[in-house]
Amino acid sequence: MTTSCAKPPGCMPLSGRTLHPGSARGGVLRLDEPLSFWGGTDQDGRIIDRHHPQRGESIAGAVLVMRSGRGSSSSSYVLTEQLRCGSGPAAIILAEPDAIVTLGAIVADELYATAVPVVMVPLADLTSLSTGDKVHVEAGPRGARIAAVV
Amino acid sequence: MDAMTLTDHEQKMLDGHHGEGVAMAMRIVTSLARVRGAPRLIEIGSAHIDGCLFHGQAGLDFAVRLRELGARASVPTTLNVGSIDLLHPGLVRDRTPAEREVAIGGRALMDAYLALGARATWTCAPYQMDARPALGEHVAWAESNAIAFCNSVLGARTDRYGDFLDICAAITGRAPYAGLHTDEGRLGEVLVDCTAIPERVLAGDLAAPLLGYLVGSRVGTRNPVLLGLPLSTSEDQLKAFGAAVASSGGVAMFHVVGVTPEAPTLESAFGSREPAETIAVTSEDLVTARRELSTATETRLDVVSLGTPHASLDEIATLARLLEDGPPVADGVDVYLSTGRSVLAEAERRGHVRVLEESGIHIVVDTCTYVTSILRPSARTVMTNSGKWAHYAPGNLGVDVVIASLEECVQSARAARVLVDDDLLR
Image: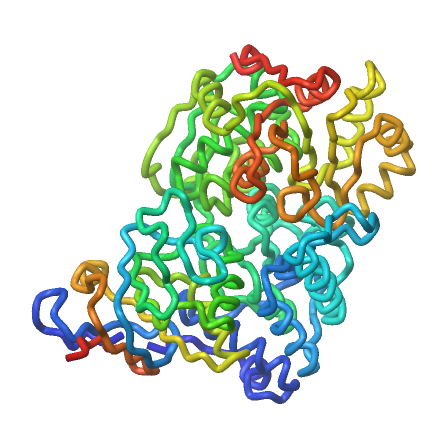
């Protein structure tokens, strides 16, 4: 894990741990609550969970920022299916090492060479990513970096 | 960062010495082990696969790719429910394009997993079959109720596995050494004090799913320890509790003091730790839980769904006895019982199936009524004795539910209206 940021939490660029490697650019969608891909999103990547505060938003092409995934282990399968269809997120930033979410990205990469990065950052750093921010996510074997696109 | 060590054999699997399919499975197992922070892998004795339920083309692509690369399960491997009932063709509808996609893709996915060397068990209750894992044995099981039962009731050790990782573990015979595989991960965390609930209530069949719903919504993914349940608590009651606690919460391991194998005493369940929290549950909490889980406002009854998780032989025998003792089920009420093939075969030998069929009960195997298109589209109000069914069906199927005891379900099916009595819980 890299801890190169000597400034207070939240300074850009953010450093994180690579859960799955890849590189992506996109607009941030930050969720207030964890999301279950199974039952919580549809095939087009829209959030359909009736209890989710971001219901109606689309995760397709977004840099999806949330504390962790939630619920059923079938979420791996649903995420892989979305990545196959091109309706999945461009990158996923988490604060917990969520195995179910990461597995969906790993399998999509095996099958469809999607290379969607999954990165873990400290919880305090999540709030420095705001919905609509344009960022570049670079996740390699030595660590990950999230930088603002100017 | 990469502190995980592999044995020579594991490294050879990863490097492709055992074929490209094994290498692909090993890449996925080791990737996940790194995410989980596992120091090494562990050998497993069996696997139970949940990836055979169809959620789209990706799952089929995955299983077919593994097969084409020559992979095969290397340990005894059972299969969870699929999307169709292979023994009762026509039970699952295939009229709309979406239904047809599931019927065709679902069958292809089930075939793909058989081709990977798994057994055609098609049940969410693999613990009701012949070979059960032993106390302390490491396995890789998927499906939340099976995971909870395996860890808690059998004392075998599995982490929370699911789609994709389950078959990769079966192929490599390995799983990440983390979570519930470790002694530390299995200790109790939250004390659930049930001593205030009358024994008569706890001896019935309605308390367990309600208690599971209640505890799951309070403890999240932590390991609960139940105190005050009767020593006579049955495996079916533990099954019902486990399925519900793994639906409203993410519980994969629970202890029942004096009943489950790793909790002969309160102290052994918690190890040297103190409970992080204590929750006291009363009869009134169970009544409230029933109201929360029951979404129906109408009393006219359309469907009764039993057997989630798949009904055991004892549960089928009890149902047969209740049905023999009274008038038939009312016209217009469909009663479904889901069970596994092996349990159904034994129930047939004992004559229970004849009673069920004469009573007009629809028997479902290989799948389940809340994951695929079985109930008639006009069905509005459904009664179930399952906390898991009650939790998922309103979202999956768009129906309203009432959770009830088995006896209430049968009486209501005869009357074609919802008949419940909360005094069962007091």
